[in-house]
Length: 376
Figure (spheres, rainbow, N blue to C red):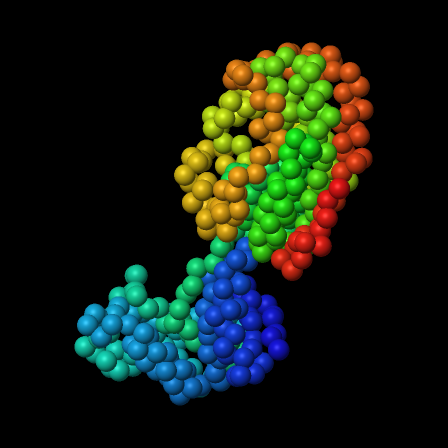
């Protein structure tokens, strides 16, 4: 059994039985993928008296010595903090006195191996004194940082299957958004391989997300065919993306999302120039966040490797963005041309609304059996 509780800006994960100590690496691994956690430290909890604190610090110091090469000196420091509401006892020392006393004790264990270094030590022993107990630790394992997923409400991410959009979704989670998805599928031109890829990306991202995210799978074929047949060829890519935003507007209202998110990176492809992004932007009714806008492709791929989406995104599975590509896409689109082109598409608003009404909604989390999620 595990007990989780919060106190003084700390979250404590207590193992109820010593027999569960083998679970600690697994718990740390999971916590390292939770946004809002700055660092993680395995601790020893002891009673609030000097002898038990000395014993705990001594034990940890010996553990650190065993883990490191005997040929290299180890720098260390001791940091002691006392909870403000903790009443002082006769035995209590001040924080500075604790630090000097425990530091001297650690150094005397192996003076030929330890060396005091307070600014950037190899080992930072931490002692946090609470009202009736003390937490002692020697490791500070980095967390993801950021904000807890969900504290800034919902975002709707346009998920394509490539490297960029899944990384963009992850970055919005890091800043406190619960992310849902909208994806566009032009069947039968694009096969089910894409849908399987999207489901796997969504499951991988669920490790970092809040709640049980939804994906709105939009049948986009009729819209793309209409743009292909009735609009200026150089403007196809811009018009595809404007159409995606028109459908996404319906979805943001349905799920009460506060914004859209895309994986656009400035200048990466023809539709992502300043003027083309401007033409696309006006089709969205909610703010559009582009967390990758200033990143290079190599930076995006490196982050995808860290997240766990890289290998999936690298798989060959054509999406609707590759369909009916113009021979010479416009790179400096004009807003008035886009507006006029859409007016010339027969029953265009009906096609947009039909795409939204016929969307298939998939709910996928970490534990979902993807084979049980069927698409039509």
